[in-house]
Length: 269
Image (tube, one colour):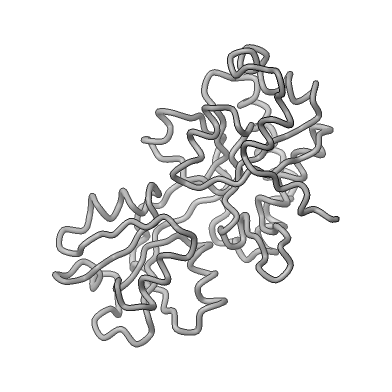
């Protein structure tokens, strides 16, 4: 049946891995110890993140940098991998409520998020870009976005959401939640542009002939991307960090980033 069987609903994964085990018991055991015992690595990912963790609409297969790296991490741990579908508004709850062991989908390591989850060392960095239509009459450069009457769409609870609300003074900010809702808002004319990062901007150029990418002259809100784990499990965080260090050192990160056209945002430090 192929790899698609590895993608399980959140609740199903929780029942599969922890039938009869309470959250407090599993936390006391430690995720690394439990993973050795169960042989299962549960990875939270967002399946609409182009080049990162993306379900191919033609085949239904998961693909992308972090899909491949999650499988590599599981192999190193001698474990099976189960992908747990999540989203940016929900992944913190999924980690804290023990529905997955690690979030691996280029998560922006912002100070606000770092108050509730732990982050690995970064492996990518991206600034913010805007996407509008090629025929938009008023948007030709970054400075054109924050104007009276402009409507800018953002994905709810992303760092683009925080940036737009804290920086734009005249444009109206609209937060959306559904996959591909931002581009729908722009293409329909309900929004003038939407904010995104480098990987998703590349998706727009690859699949939407109407799209125009607006890049600031000076990078805006450059944010480290990292893997996320629940707090208070230092042994597990240390193991995740060792994996991040190893993929930088042995060239796997660079190789896979090249495959998915993400080389410009690789964090090499």
